[in-house]
Structures are given as C-alpha cells and as structure tokens.
Length: 302
Image (cartoon, rainbow, N blue to C red; front, side):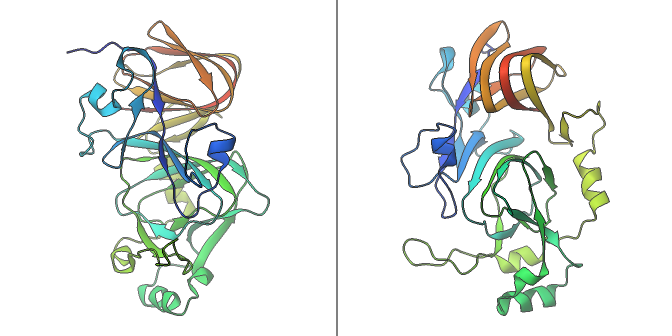
C-alpha cells in the first residue's frame, strides 16, 4: 500500500555515553532525562534505534515501518547523528562504515584524531598500546566550526573533547575500540577494547585518497557541497529568506536544522523548522522549499 507522503518529523533516539555533554539537551532542546546526551540519532532505521514519526497521520509509527524496511537489516543505507563530546572519545576504527563529520562547534584548542602520523606498523602499534604511548603515533588535527572531515572505513579516528558535530554515516554502529585512556565506567569497569579485530582493518590513507572518496560520485560542485559519495550527498545551506532544493526522483532526503528557524514544505505540506529538528522527506518530492533564517544540512540518498 502506498503511504501518504509528507515531511516526516523524527524523534531523536538518545544515547547516554560516558564522554557525552549537555549541549544537545540545553541548546538543542532535545528532551532526555539522563545525566548527559552524547548522541542524538536524528535519522535511523537500526536495531539499536528506529526513528519515530512525530507528526501527521503516521505519528507514533517508526520510520522503518513507514518504509516497510526491517530495522535488523542494512536495507536503509544511512544514519545521521548529532554528537556532543564533552570528553574525548576512544581511539577507534570502523570495519564497514564510512562517515562524514561537520563541525558545528568546537572549543578553542579542540582537536580530532585523524589517522596516524606514519604508516601503520602492527608490531609498533601494539607495543605503543602496551606501553601506554599510542597517543604518540596519532595524527591530531585542530578543528573549528564549519570544517568537514571524511572518514573512510579503516581510518583510525576519534572526536576530541569540546566538539559538537553532525555525523552522516553508513548505516552501521560497529566500532572497534583500540584505546580508551584507561578510564572507568560508573561501576568501576574498563570499557571493552577490540584490539585484535582492529589490527585487521586499520588502513593508511593519503589526503588525496580521502578527498577522492569524499567526492567519488560526480555532481554539481559549489560551496554548499560537503560530500558526494556512493552512500550519500550532503549539502549545507545558510537560509536567509528562501531556498529550493531539488533531487532525483529516486532519492529521499533528510533535513537537519543546526540553528535558526523557519518552515519546510514538500508534497504541498508545510511544517515548522527549528533547531535540532530532523525531517525525512520521502522519494519523489521534486522540490523541498525552506523559508526563514536557518542553517541546515540536507542529505540525499537512495
């Protein structure tokens, strides 16, 4: 049965993690009763979180059910998160996940781990882990708001303390944690590491290889384009007045509001747009209209 199409506002799936902060609660007005809100999954059809529709005739239904997609599969290709790192994340690598970070905010001096200083050498890396010196091998990059970092699967990486990002990623939550600063959880236990698994997937990348992966699918290039790869195409807009966004007939879109307010119109239906709001716009929308004063990220996928 063909379901009615309109902009579906999605309720974020909230995750409390040891390194999380409170900016998503206090600044983005996301309702959550936990001590911190590390991740707000703005778009997800996944076993660990299935977006719930908040508006219209399908309010209360999960996005997976609306689309007829089983959340236990990877048939839905992408996931979008807002991530607030009050503390640094573990040093990690993904075996089957490509992702992109847009830096929304960063405290002065904040940095990310973005690969290694030298080519990966497993015995040297293992020795550094055993001696507590692995940070000496990591490539730390200072970041500031507005920057974009593309992380192909196999790249060692970590978000540093004091950084707020929008993450557009492949629909997978598999992470191999290789180092976590020996910090302990509330119950006193250390977080699980996956060193042996990580050794088999860590890869070296040149800047040119990462840039080629980030723009691997040709499309019209302008200052709004953040990435265009096989999984997703991402544009960031500063709307001051009105915007018309168009996509192919077989593409759906997600509109994520980073700041400001306004309205969003698709399929002849107009909805409120405000900071932290996430809308899923089904395939065949033709044009999405945005009016107001807002900073938004639009992600298209198939």
